[in-house]
Length: 107
Length: 125
Image (tube, rainbow over all chains, first blue to last red; front, top):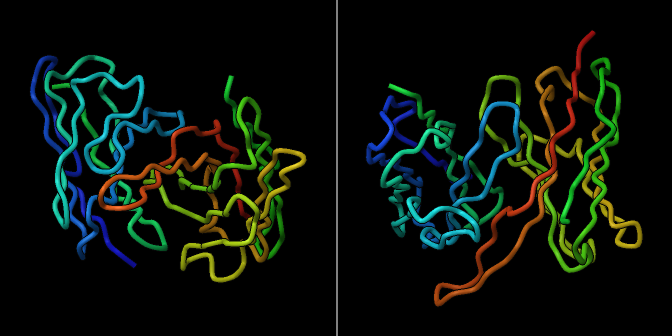
């Protein structure tokens, strides 16, 4: 199975900060990657699909980039509602695999 | 309104079975792949299984070891997960999710755009 490694596992940031989360695949996965946001006690929410396509209704401060092995989720200006845990998920092959998550906390 | 509602979770003993259901509404269920994802308490997300629109193709996570079976009933617009020989490590919230497919120059891409609220499964003696 493809391993997805996210970094950092957690970070502290302030409102207005630019935040970058990375996800590295154990092999090339083209652009078959999505990003999800999860708040405590809630279901995950799709932010980005196909590595860089913004899901309908998601604020434009979220963006994704990358192809092959290395991928990035960027929040251009962190808002109070963005404090959450973020996961990447590869859809290149089966079994699908998630990264271990990145928790974004308030500094 | 597009909605997914899971049910069937609960407390079971190791070795027992449980069947989860996911009732859907607000979209054409029979035209989407569907999936199950789980999350152990305090842990990350783990993909469990998915199933094609007509049920003819299914995929599972390696760790399920043939103990789980995904199925669907398009007439009832419902998704199911039969879980047998349950273990304490199967304790988790189980989410169902709609799998939507897009296409670009690189080919097809899957993502989970609609999720249920989850149902808790606890395996303990």
